[in-house]
Length: 110
Image 1 (cartoon, rainbow, N blue to C red):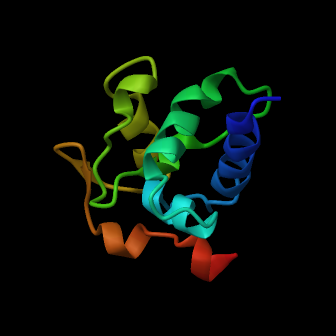
Image 2 (image 1 turned 60 degrees about the vertical axis):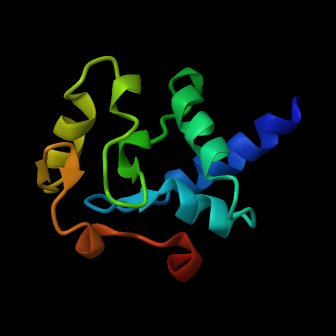
C-alpha cells in the first residue's frame, strides 16, 4: 500500500459521511484530517475515487467558494451539477447558490 492510499482512504471515509443535500470543500476535509495545507491531495483523492470498489460521493466535494471545480472528472461537463441538483442544490454558472446553507464541516459534524 502506498502512503497516498491510506490518506485517500481517510478522505473517502469522510466523503461518505457527507449527508444527502449537503456539500463540503477539499480544504474542510484536509483540515479535519489534520493537514490544512493538503486540500490539493484531497482533490487528487476525489479525482481517483472512480476506481474505488466502494462508491464515494465525490460530487459533494467542491472548492472553498462552492465552485464545481472537479466537474471535468465526472465523465461529462454536467454530471456533477446534475447529481447535486438531484439532491436539491441549486447551481448557477458552476457555483452552488446559498453555499453556506449547504456547507457541511466535518470538523464540527464528526
